[in-house]
Length: 217
Image (cartoon, helix red, strand yellow):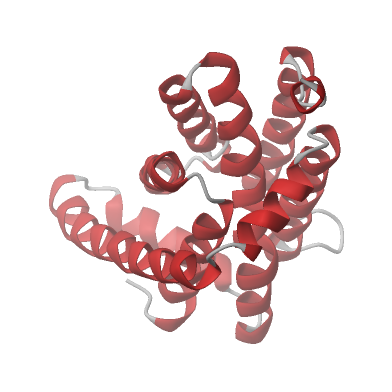
């Protein structure tokens, strides 16, 4: 019972959802904040929001530590396999999108244009150590977990995936929003299946590194 009382209530979830939405909507609209370019700002958003989730849900840090301590090699293997599966989905999706949507080519080019002016080493470090882990700690481990407890696992999955896609709307890039929707459903389904933030962190970080740096589509 004590653990349940320490979980965030509806008001806390709504408050952090509004704050997180504002942070990411501003990021995708402006892409720069003072001295922070897109990548530094993205990493800062991910970790500020993740830290809020870890603070508000008092049991989360201990759950996360146990998640990494128990069976991590198997979880890492699942994460690696799922990252490859998501990459294959995007490769096929790119081919389909270029045939169906007249705006697809420019939208994809705009997403990769975010790399302009940022060093490869910095992008690798931020994607692998800050953005990928921070987003999974926030979106799946905090939001989907707690919304699932409040609304039911299926509803928590759908709501989290929907909000994850919607915060990308301010980019005004339909391909980025569509990509976020696919990722939200994929990683949400992965969390629904394994209930492991560790699995999701490996999947997200590896996929992001491959698709943005190692083997862009």
